[in-house]
Image (tube, rainbow, N blue to C red; front, side, top):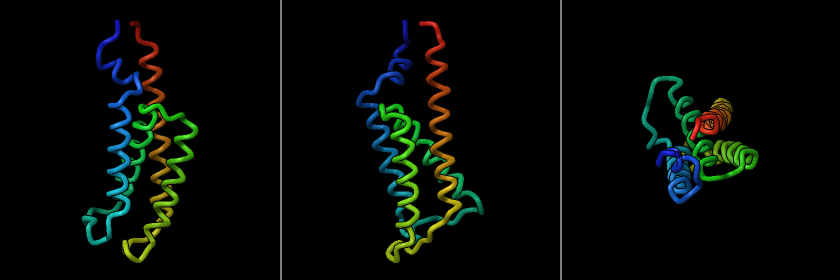
Length: 126
């Protein structure tokens, strides 16, 4: 017999889609905030934020039922476009290849975490 929490993670229902939607909205707020709204932090913290943000997008996207390959392509494209758009004068931010690399690392991390969790769930006796 499966537990309620196991079923919640296994099903691609409204909760999963909602989590992915919230993660997407948070990413929009973080990635497209004007430079004046971005708090200062020690060097490297922004890269950690990029990795975690895209890891959450990848894992929540898989939970919502988006296929792995499709999600990877969409998120890497989103990362590239977001970096290009950050160079717009209205945002007063800059494009960063290091941020793009952190975004892609986050996508890979999120997909790997989801795959490991899925294998663990599949191997557990019901």
